[in-house]
Amino acid sequence: MPEPQNVRIAPSLLSADFARLGDQIALVERAGAELLHLDVMDGHFVPNLSFGVPVVESVSRCTDLALDTHLMIAEPARYAAPFIEAGSTVINFHIETAQRPQEVVDQIRELGARVGVALNPGTPAEAILEIIKTVDQVLVMTVWPGFGGQAFIADCLEKLTIVSRQLRPEQRLVVDGGIDRVTAPLAVRAGADVLVAGSAIFGSADPAAAYRALADLARQAAREMEVAKGA
Image 1 (cartoon, rainbow, N blue to C red):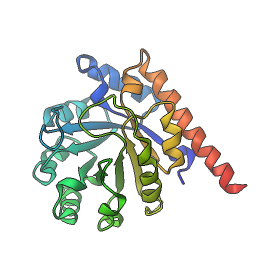
Image 2: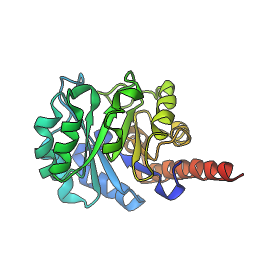
Image 3: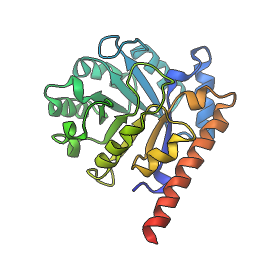
Image 4: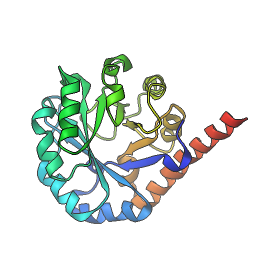
């Protein structure tokens, strides 16, 4: 179960105002963010395009926050190196794209980054059993990847719980998609300790306040779990 102080909100820059990206990053950084989430889409694995290496480079120049880069692309092994060179702290690749996933894990780690494996909503938890002990985090999609602002798929909560039971304390469980003030506590109770939030933060008139509100709700859910566990 996640400890309250370890539950983190990862603002997703896909929903930020790119005309004011540096300012928006500074807002959430001052609000307490410890990491940023960057969604890279190739128009092949997912039906949309987002941004690439130059944006990651620009983000890394304007912040010291950890950059959690989510490669929603068909060939993660081919493009991992330039994203790591651009400043990515973590590289998440999709299990659906990897014929030999352990080789992808090893490659990313050898390049000096932490490794995450991601699962689409329709992919069962069993798909990552082969490598789950060798990654730093598991990212469970709770929307279909490709577009921001989608509604949370509640059926994915069971998958979060299944995955959380397989992880060691030092491994992270990331939830990505539809996180807001209602779904954040649900995700924490299911075992997630990193919550990616885009529209709920940057779609707000006050992103800093929205970030703090989400973080408070998530940590309160974790505290309640600890109390219940000790009762």
